[in-house]
Amino acid sequence: QVQLVESGGGLVQTGGSLRLSCAASGRTFSGYAMGWFRQAPGKEREFVAAVSWSGKSTRYADSVKGRFTISRDNAKNTVYLQMNSLKPEDTAVYYCAADPSILFREVTYWGQGTQVTVSS
Image 1 (cartoon, helix red, strand yellow):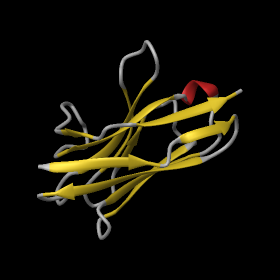
Image 2 (cartoon, one colour):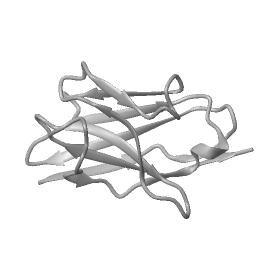
Image 3 (cartoon, helix red, strand yellow):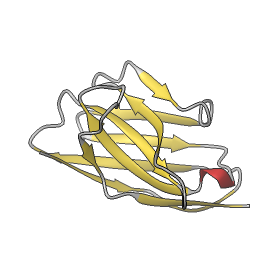
């Protein structure tokens, strides 16, 4: 079992930056790809970014490419999402996720979410 706890959300103005963190604990963090998803009010949860266990492979949604960067520190069991040039449409609850596959066809573990609000 893996527990995921997100932090770093908040209120920011358009064009600003935030860094989300997700701390993993439990049986093992090893071998899992980590990812971020988000869900805006009235919309379905959508994929944002993912990083492989080694950190060598990453994936991004087209809507965040060039603005968001995902990274991980396996020594700290933590994954990060650096979000720059934020837009109002980035407003959502952001969820950390873990799965054996970076493709995240089915998510094995979810965090509880952290709110990100971008004001115009």
